[in-house]
Image: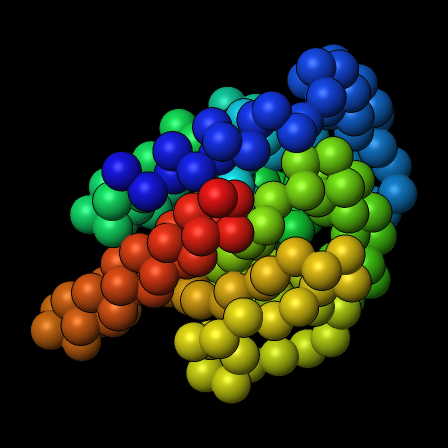
Length: 216
Ligand code: SF4
């Protein structure tokens, strides 16, 4: 299984990394850098091993994540888990987080409808992603969707234009861009959705292999 790579990297991570990460997570609980903290239930910080070779960055927590206080526990997270399993990537060895750490939504009756984060919110929350990346230093960071790509690359990109190759981040780490799993869930055409899902799995396999190669 590919992500055993993270274990090899563990030796170069200081033993205080976990407590530094916990301090960061606790600090994020009180973040008011933008207005999104107000209507949301709580900050949904990233989670996973602090020596992860792969970091996955989504857009923002959804309704279920907002209530649970954990990233990628809703339907999109379940699809990601399945795809990682099929790609041979050990989910438990990956760090998962979001570009924006509070749930942005519009109330509609009793329901809370997802609302897309805008540039100023993405920019405000970028500070947390930078802290997470600085601490974990993953050789490969994966942007799931355009919001994550915008946060990580610092500019607006299209998925079609950015996927399929490595982008070098300021700290020298690689960033790979692909779709957000929620995009696959929303596709109305079943056969097209299957094709896109297969492409997604193939990309995850490539990213996992890349992370393993970079941590040897
Ligand atoms: S969305 Fe990010 S920047 Fe805005 S309040 Fe929440 S944690 Fe802070």
